[in-house]
Length: 304
Image (cartoon, rainbow, N blue to C red; front, side):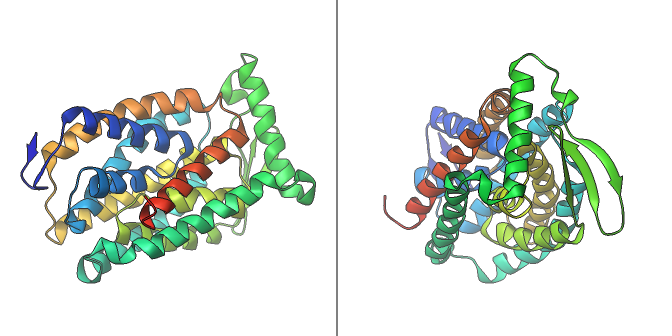
């Protein structure tokens, strides 16, 4: 099938399959959806205009939160305060990143080696966290304990919300919540400014931002992966809408037929992802994300 705006000919089944992969990966681990979408459009489908790829990829990552977040909400696996703080900073970052990208980052190929190095760093951090002993860090031990308690409860037939996110108290300098019989807290300024910086980069490159948000919440904030996926998806939805709207304001046209077919596949993958993810072990989710990042880094580095 020929798509005039993108100027490509591509089988519909391939678009559906790739869209399904994007939706499944993003809804399962809360990351790499935008990266997979960009890689697909540039390297698999052959789109040569990076300014078309950027908002199209972000539009695809927007579909998954709209499908997956309500499912995570029903399972009590979203930390709303954290998501909105990340999103608030992300709105400012998305406006800046997309504006700079249209003006100065019109050739995506220039940024592939740098992007690959960043992805390898993140994958290395996740791999290190997987391999190190839990005795090295009380925070990591608490994270794994919460995840294992939640997994045992769900696998034994328990209701997800019984051990899901429950808010304790909020102060000017600290937010407190409980998950998996463990208490967690964070400063509101950390996610706000981190969300701003992540949105600048993700909007400039046309990706969702989960590839940075998920490691940030896992490695820096020491949160269980079971609540990271839904929380990051909600934050990404907020700044992705801002970024896409700004790209269109700046004169970028989308290929709507191509986007519609890809979105159909993304919807299917997004429905399956949250259903399966709660039965996958915490370390399995981390290892899967690490593998995805390594493969993408190799592709952007030109290894294959």
